[in-house]
Image (cartoon, rainbow, N blue to C red; front, side):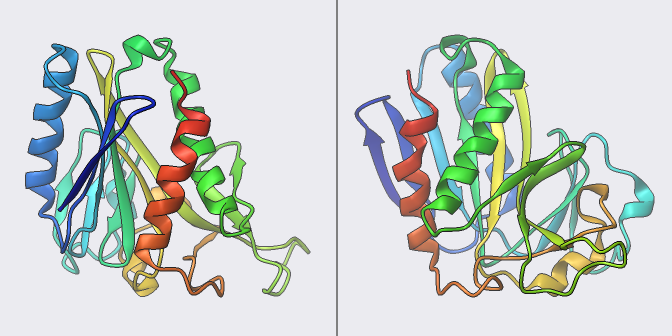
Length: 225
């Protein structure tokens, strides 16, 4: 486990090796968020990988769980619908204090999106936001046009947050090189019309360490004090 602190904003960075148990991660996040709210701990960005699992956000619809017996399913108090976590996917849990970041939830979500987009740009990937579609998307120039004559778009990153006492937890996930077939057990974020991709699927020989460096390098450009 690698732990460090960014001196510019006093945010602690932690990278967990191996696969992190989901229930343990949630308990750790909730405890840390409570400590941050009380002024007893620094903000934290925690980078993990999970074993294969599905999580159901507060807006999850039962019919979107296509294969309920494929992997463990965890009820989550974050916003959003069903998501997949598993090896090859970088999950960045963000425990940040919004009371010193403007107390603007909408802007905070936009900043999280901007952070993902900036990190993807480090690899010359153009991530985009779509109205009514959660997450970060890439236009696939390498795939045939859709039946409507449009370029297909695939999801490369997901965002799901909870905010309590003006402290955020949960966060985002970027598909580095997961088994994309694992997404077939759910309708990711309730969106049936579009696919899911990863950095490696897009043709980039990117490692988890590369993505971690990109996330840390771009964090301060978005989340300035």
